Length: 221
Image (spheres, rainbow, N blue to C red):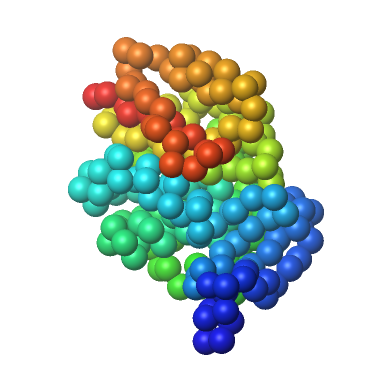
């Protein structure tokens, strides 16, 4: 494919759309692969896929293969789903919650997300979904951004406690955060400090990208 070949030299934009939730959404050939971006950040594939793959590897692919149900808060183009299914060979249920229907339409059209049979996509607000779900999950991946902004509710103790409540014993939370200034560093340290150390093991992974920091919470049985 000519576009794929030339994308190793210069990124080639093939789709652009304004979304009410995510501002401008772009699909681009870059370094031989399709990536999904907003105006100021990578949303799926590219660097984001490398970041979340790093987090999953830290949890352990062997542990993930034994899990029965994974919850993804923030689907975008579905790159972490592809990592789970194609690279880790995860066979069990994945529930993805995405607030922006435009994002899912693009994910289906350009990244074939709707061909993954074990994936159920729910169009909903992540906060509302977490409050009302009756399920418990082995792994909860939180990857929610509005361009470079992270909604405040993600760091509120009420939401953190609720996420931990719907986590199975020995389950994991993988939380992708963006660090743009010192206030964000303080915010992340406060987040980790507020997780109950008697019930959970919490760690921040060394960064592999400048602005992304992964937090892992493990519920100790």
